[in-house]
Amino acid sequence: MGVNQWGEIITILMIGIALGMDAFSLGIGMGMGGIRLLTILKVSATIGIFHIVMPLIGIAIGIFLTSVVGHVATYIGGGILVVLGLHMLWNSLFNEEESPLLKTSFWGLLLFSFSVSLDGLSVGLSFGLFNVNTGLAVSVFGIMTTILAAIGLMVGRRVGHWLGEYSEILGGIILCAFGIKFLL
Image 1 (cartoon, rainbow, N blue to C red):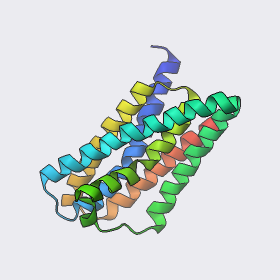
Image 2 (cartoon, one colour):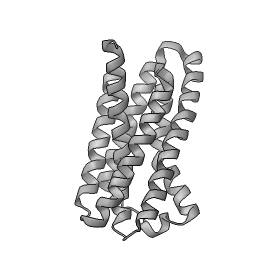
Image 3 (cartoon, rainbow, N blue to C red):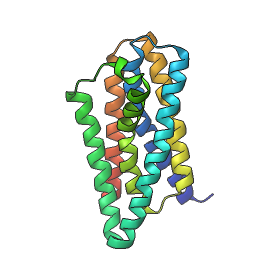
Image 4 (spheres, helix red, strand yellow):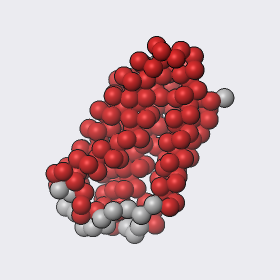
């Protein structure tokens, strides 16, 4: 494997972790409501599936936009990552979370998973603009998010709320850093 391939793998892994941090931090809050292990499995798997599907949709849109806007696509993708990172930072610092109990019903779980995976749609869009290995990217996003969501839910069962906000801040910083890298 060449240096560029390792760089792509490391970038995808870091962004996968950043996307998973959102699910991790929300999972802590949700887990603090005292959920069962079967519910943890169901919630984390659903979030993971959404983090595969949403980036795929974003990548398809990004590939289309690349054919339309050409070389400007790199700057658009970098800008999207910066905005997404700033949005994560803003939410972690200023927004209140809704009740975790609303997120465990079937429709609540789908809505929760969709809302958590919107950042995956945006990252997928920027990846579609960059010509990234799609299979690798969505696999890493799905796996990392599933694992981090499950860990967050289990940690939430055991630990206080203090850790959740810091993990989302870290995820926002990582996305901003990669967005700035693509802009420069």
